[in-house]
Length: 546
Image (cartoon, rainbow, N blue to C red):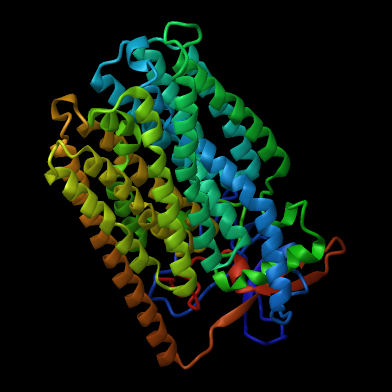
């Protein structure tokens, strides 16, 4: 099967481009990448190199725009079936990776004889495993069913979190935290990919926001679990920190089973959708210009992702933003340092969860009102972090209520990260390119997370002036990077508009898949160009959201 591009609205067969001679049995496409300034698009794909939805969309390329009532019904159906699974997963993931934070006041420091530096290293170990496996995960999720791969890794991390109950040494905990990070390395990228398969651009940002709100829910749930097990006698077997880990292990096993059974890999195998529903889902998201999924790794798209300046803007944003992540590991120690006891500390983190939920809710409401304002909402979202860090540096130490309030104010910064994460999810097309960019974004995320635990040293306690100064600088840097990203995307959109005006031509909207039947005859199938698995550089009708 091969493909060529046809002009919008034409029914004539466009001659197929000459077939390349294969020099290898590899399924990798060796085509050279286009540059952003190319004025023409060569779309020449092999059968397995086009989008997985081409089959179900055959014959529907020029269907009328979907009726708004049908579109709304499909969206509700997707929400009822997908959002609960996404919410459960992200709540659980946050519980897992930050379990070490709750365990810090439930006896793990004494039980495993950990120094402050060793405890900080356990936070680093998680993201060391994450960063090592993030790119292999990206490759595996393109080659194998993505939901099944996620379910398998949820089961793996349930094993690793459970084994921490039996660990009483720094070395064992370090190894298990590394493996826990390795197994969780597919989750954020997987969620970004799955959501982008079913929803349009504004809906993607909203639903990513709602999903990440579950970090706040997880903080609340974690605090209540910690409060409950903190009443157990430290000397009674099993001790509180083991009870905490066992509860999360059981929840993880249950979720892995649910995911394997219920989560679809893409619209083609969503069991809750009828055949017509699947066509309607694809019709609804054509406007994204992103395509859905392709199961062939394409070398030229990988290289293009590395050359794209947007890739590195998102990388540096993630690296800087996640220098703030140490708070997730240190929160219990910080709050207890203000002068509260263990039981009080377990409950006093609950408002942090509500602060995150409120900020992301406000951000998604604002996005619905101003659909092209992600970067503005994101930049404003980091302002509370600047204020909170400034006040933590200069409020009198005796003002416990004021200091504690700033911890909650800082949590309002979550909406800034969500806006940029959702922008990353919709700013690239070509499945290999998208998976590569997701992996690079998460590598930046891991670099920040690995470093962020290392400046919360015992010598800075309890005032922590050095850590709070570093955090203050990162919030300011985040705002700058977001505004630079906005400037670049606006400039690129204007360049493309000017190029189109100068050419006086309309963009190609359809491609033709050339299929060889069993009798040797050729069948040409007309499909929208965005489902030909071309990149945003190749697709000149692609415009970047802001």
